[in-house]
Length: 99
Image (cartoon, rainbow, N blue to C red):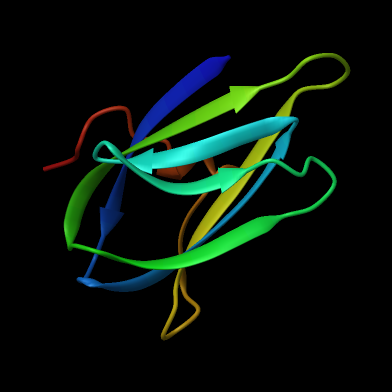
């Protein structure tokens, strides 16, 4: 099992959609609360939930038992579709909250 932790800034309290794909299984936790679990390595899982405004600690947990290992995720505003975070853009990978 591996864990990666980042801080993500949520501009408003509103619904956000979390999408994740993991080889083999994993889950996302925000501020200690599990947001989404993913158990199907061959497809993407998505969930929509309300998140409060401000910096939030995002933890990714992933397990792999052979073969390539991968974790991909994205967070978008449910109302506007605007992307606020993804695993491909290194400018989003804050390890501490920004002022």
